Figure 1: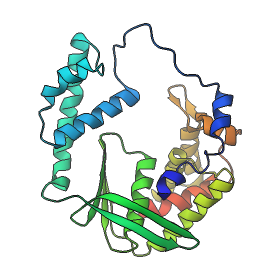
Figure 2: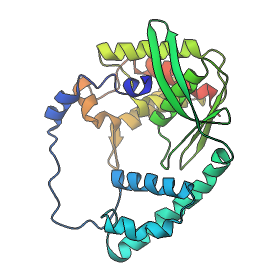
Figure 3: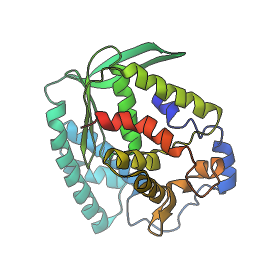
Figure 4: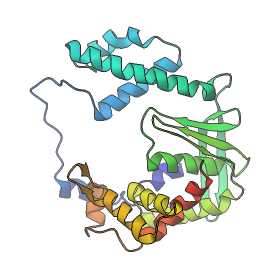
Length: 273
């Protein structure tokens, strides 16, 4: 599908080089027991528990299973951690239920020609003539763009809204009248990114376009984007991604960054609720 390729079009050719330059090595096995669960482990566990919760299962019954599987710290630390995030997942499940209940999940097969590109695939998660996307995590610019591209593809054949639900917000994309033009522009940028690094960085680009949509000046938007790009003492900047370090060695955002950020994110932001 276009989205999986679009998000990595500027990093495919750089992946091996980035691995060499960054000096990445497989992490050594820890000699000490972990007393915390976070990052990818936390995310994967949350998604498993969310699936169980949506099926109507009692999450308290899964504590011993997850503990025995080594997915939780032992003792009181593990019990408290599990109680905390399982409670939050129950609340998230309750937030989802109005969008999921009383409707059967359907899919839509996509086979459409857009300019010189042919898009073939299948989009899952359609309920009551709406595309429902959700996961128990903060909504990221990549989440928004992924849902937006699927939304545009569905609207090529039928008017349909899309709901994107995260742990922090709910975003809706109403039906789009002219998805063809927007998709063609995205595809042209995708193709450009396959030939040479595209000056598109999801977090920084989103911050720039979002600031302009909210009435900020070009200078203010650039400042906000630069903060996301560069980071500070408390947060790693987007530029520190090993792929970007290979493709864009300059410390500052590239000159054409703003133009591409607006082109990709502005239609999406103007359409979202």
